[in-house]
Image 1 (tube, rainbow, N blue to C red):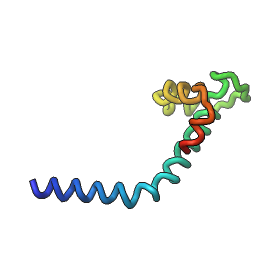
Image 2 (image 1 turned 60 degrees about the vertical axis):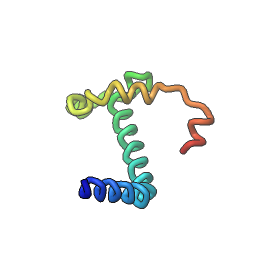
Image 3 (image 1 turned 90 degrees about the horizontal axis):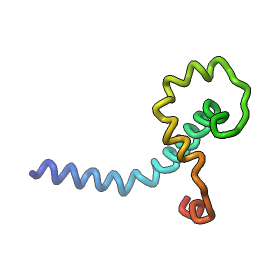
Image 4 (image 1 turned 30 degrees about the vertical axis):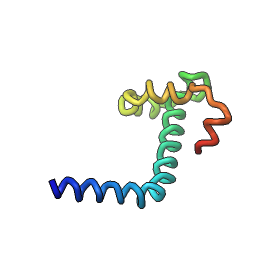
Length: 85
């Protein structure tokens, strides 16, 4: 009981003090992943790219992330989405 309580307090303090430091890094990671997926699957959402042999080699590794990426890429955005960032 005491160990779990101390672990919860430690996790809470890590969240308070380390979240502001990790958020820009995670945001940059999400942006780079989006750009990577865009370079591979951009033609599926209407942006023409020259097809490359290496794109085909990367498809099996990124296929699981295709559906969530398409939803994010084709989502309509407005001013209030940008205010939160």
